[in-house]
Length: 433
View: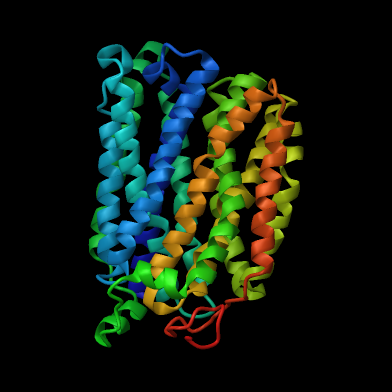
């Protein structure tokens, strides 16, 4: 029990750091980075440029996943999680030290791009590693609840990022644009140190320990995924594709939309993100626990179906300009897309795979889908908004269509509740062929 609690806490804190890094970057992209790093562009082009650097971080995530997956299934979950933590925290700290465009010209956005790639490379195996470790550590019947703590950590990171921006926006504009934003990125150092201390004391999962003792660790986990685990990997990819798109649309694009199109105060955006994150963190545990009782597939299918219908009502609520309506719409998005659905993923996806390449399979499926989904979602939404003269309808259609893909993939997936994680067979086959 002590090892389980320690694993849960380490997974929660580490994912909190990852999400904190991404939220403060995403918020900065929506609010200030266009002025700091792309000052010569028009407002709409500056926003597109900021979101392009944001998307680069997601482009680096599959590369990080490919790199770290090899070691996660061969050397162990624990040390990979330590390495990714240091890379993410160091890259975020470096962003806070960067010169701006007015100081060094074109070099500034280039350096920003490099740091953002470092963030993404480290994050490529973070959530998948935490989910795999916790799912393999938890007892049957409790995997959904325990693994969902990874997404509670993500909600905590979102909340911390929102609080950081709320405090920073109390500064005068010149102070915020000169050193206030740097302080936000520098604050990730504290979370990094706390998470590092916890992760160094982690025990390896029982499943990996048995693999190690029986000398069954694969020489090339990624190769085995493509040889034997393509079906569960593709299922995970498409199940996450639409959900990831909606998740990062709510977390990043909506902030820009509220300020530039609806006309709300910039100070209101971090506040509503904070409320959404707190509600989302609670939803992750609730949906994870519910999946332990009702099954992974019915719970995930219900959430995906709701997300297909959600975008149009969301934009209608946002465009009222009412703070209450906006808050309700964003909170529902966070509960379903950002944390509730992914809370179920944290046990569902590891259970799809056999023991030899579980870490690699979950990582590849989630990170490639995050690249084509959440990574480019703010950029595509901004481009659609610009191309259709500010109309939200194409954005809502895009969100619904990609989530329909996730719903179809979920209905094609097997139920995995409480399956034996020590078997080499994937959930999509009865015996290894």
